[in-house]
Image 1: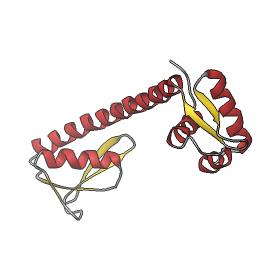
Image 2: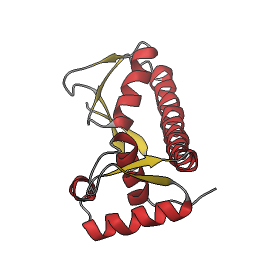
Image 3: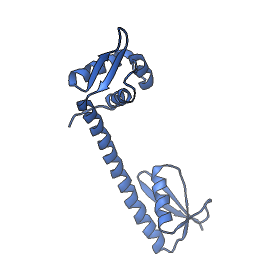
Image 4: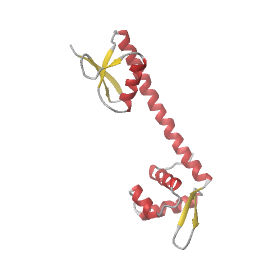
Length: 154
């Protein structure tokens, strides 16, 4: 597998979306120096990932080669795979917490927070028939680190 850094992936992505982009435009979009863009593009050409066409004296077109597309796709698939692993881990933890809620006869919870891990818990509660409260009035759930935590009010 080809090792590609995030900024290289980002540059390949920009080239894939806009083959007519200038190095100055790519520099601005990615927040890196024009000289760095130039250096990376030369590297991509040497690796066979990008092909350059001269449209006129001053205009270039950058195209991803099949090899460049393969590298780009490989990195995207790795990201998707890793994201699914993280989702799966949170989903498993959420199911365990929801089972505990059900075993304790809890039918309504307030979920604190607003991120992807909290969304997974919300979905799991809804699927299990546990109502979501708009205010904290009994059982509060939240994410602490990489775990779900429950607190009960008296």
